[in-house]
Image (cartoon, rainbow, N blue to C red; front, side, top):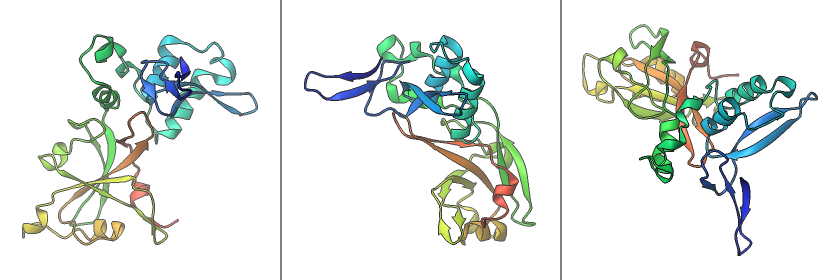
Length: 235
């Protein structure tokens, strides 16, 4: 597939995996030359589709050159904050135009469903201690289930992590109990409020790293975060 041209000379891209038309190509199979030059092969609607092409269908005869599959996987993993997309989720038979029941949007969200626990950081309100916790995937693709830490699933708050006095792009999810500040038994979380330069966190909070992905439908999902990333926001 690739780039197609209509009768009126307008062009569009087509996903090599699903046949879905794309306004622009955002996901691809990376091929690294011996000199380290990156060549982008194919057009894909999301990274799971690209991984399926690499691992399942072996569409690219030169993929074994210069590390081939390993280089492709590492390159995609570096783009997604350490996530290795699950190629088995990119089952095209689930798409409605191929006999399945999922629309393009539903299938796209299904593809980024987490299949393993993700590492988050819990900030204790009383002591300020930061502890690594492993949280299972949430009900919504790309989210976490905080019920194992708090006993119930919390609301989601998206923050910009301050850096050198200037906000960066939003790459942090903070899960917390928004009703905690109305509960006199909950402690003001100095550590979390200082970290994010806000003044409304009460009780423990859970911090997760976020990856913003440019796909056919842009999406956001959580990935692993290190304690070191929650200690200081200064370079």
